[in-house]
Image: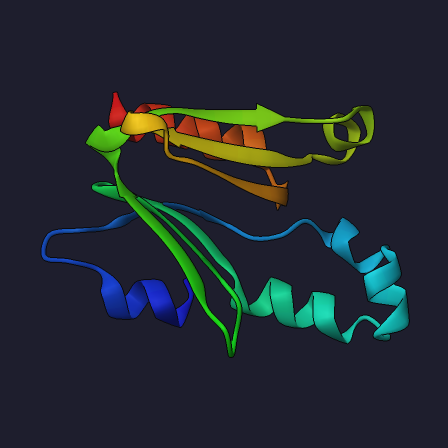
Length: 123
């Protein structure tokens, strides 16, 4: 588990599932032009976690963007996968909250498993 989630768990909160970016992020133009350094930093630093109380998504190292939402405020977690995404096991996760809040995170490893764990914890 990453340091951001470790440092920000609230009382009686436990991690139920954690994932990261799929290895396919290395095979993009961004990966090739930066000699795979930026994708490696992204994969090492970004965190996508489901706890027994909320969903936490943190991206960035220097400039940090966090998305945290209580489970009871989430209407659904959607997964979009291309054909390659289905074959290789990655997809885009979209978290839709009450009031129309919508956040998407592309190229997440085991995206279907992320949604399944959310449904198990929230249900």
